[in-house]
Image 1: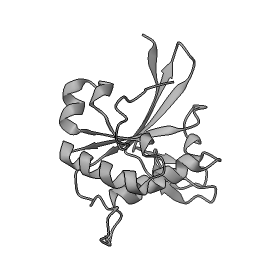
Image 2: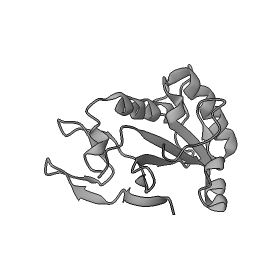
Image 3: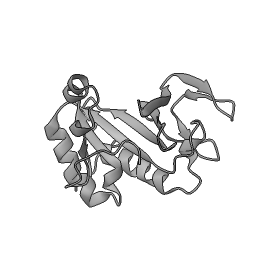
Amino acid sequence: TPLALKEVVDEGQRLNRFGKIRPATAIVSDQGDTLIVPDVVYVLHSRRTGNDAVFMVEIDCATETLGGGLSMARSETVVDKFKRYESLLLDEKRPWRRFLKTKAKAFRVLFVTETQNRIENLQKRCEVVLRYPEFFWGASHMDVVSSHMDTRMWLSMKTGLTKLALIE
């Protein structure tokens, strides 16, 4: 097969370089502050090109509001979390690569949630708020389970983008 699963990291715990126990997926700053904690991170490797693709997975149970509107949510919203991911994408230091064995220059966020309607509502918000919505993709739990991770099930947060490229 042309693709290989190179690495999978889940939320298990690990000791970081600052001597603190954190979730294994925690992405930390140079100062040791937690920037974000994805639910799962995986790296696919192309045997044909030698390139890697990094995917940060967020499993959503619809307990957080989507955000991105005019209302002022008291807790972090999904859009707030996506903005933090986007700032990591733009960070030239690439702190997200510290715990991964990859030379990938970017990552994609895969958002798995309860309904297609929630994904479509999130898409509308992301297009207004994010500079790079093409790095964010959503699918329903049911689609993920029934499609065996077929790339056609993913909906981009950028309207009109229809195919999730696993590795370029």
